[in-house]
Length: 197
Length: 233
Image (cartoon, rainbow over the protein chains, first blue to last red):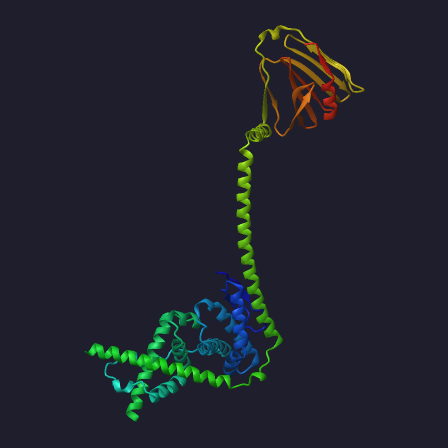
């Protein structure tokens, strides 16, 4: 493996001191990564700009997402185009949230108010995989808190807990906890929908 | 039964979440794709420079890695070639002998030269030699002879040369540490020359006698003197 430290020189305080590992082995890897950037750079920018609202931070987010893609290059599957786009989008969103939180000195915390244990009393009929239910759950996930939505979306890209932990730079235990809580929230939502319906 | 229901529940929920979250991701990023037209996005020069730098540095690292690999292979190949060459050279006994002797001569602080004669009666013989070439300005200063040695010393102010003829009954040792040692022929005899600290000494054996000449003159001049030493026996 080839490891190299890159120091992104920038006057922005956040960028100063940022260092990454890069793991590429051959010229073909470099060409592929370059193509990946050319194809998705504007998409990444759109994702970042939607959160950060300014060009400077959005470009910073694109650069860091690019570095992260290279860093995780040998661990990610880029065979499916749609999946690749979604994966890059989720990583870029995560990087953008980090920049946003650092700038605003805001801290995302885990939501501890939800039910933490599985209850065997939920009705099976609640969870029929119908188009209607899928749409409802999709909307619910769409509107979830970021900390849960990101892990759920990454899980949907067939990534393991360890891989998600690696991408989001959080502990695997935290990933597991968030997935479980997200799951509980979805179940509660479906139960509520059934009672309302 | 309860366990089966739980397992069914869990797997169904998981499948539902998987379909829904995948659809949620598609919808989220489809919307983002359409949020800003592509032609309205123009990256700054600074940003493009950073990206190019990242890619260029990666290329450089890969090239350096490949170069290191190649250099290692070439070094191994060179070492193997050198070993094979040494093996083939040292397999020739004459070369091996010369190398070993050269090694011994130049690494020994003291060089042993063996001159010997089986005839002990030489010890009792009186003998003499003549110096037919004396460099200009030199005069005979000291001379002595004994039953086993005949010695002459010539001087010219601070410069000198001295010659001895000794019966070769034993081994003789010369301090050759840091000396330049070479072989030559003097009066058809194999000789050894030592040059150290601006002094030259030549020694050779003839008819059971050892001759040595020592001087602070230039070695060419010393050889000339040696070549013009004549002896009766």
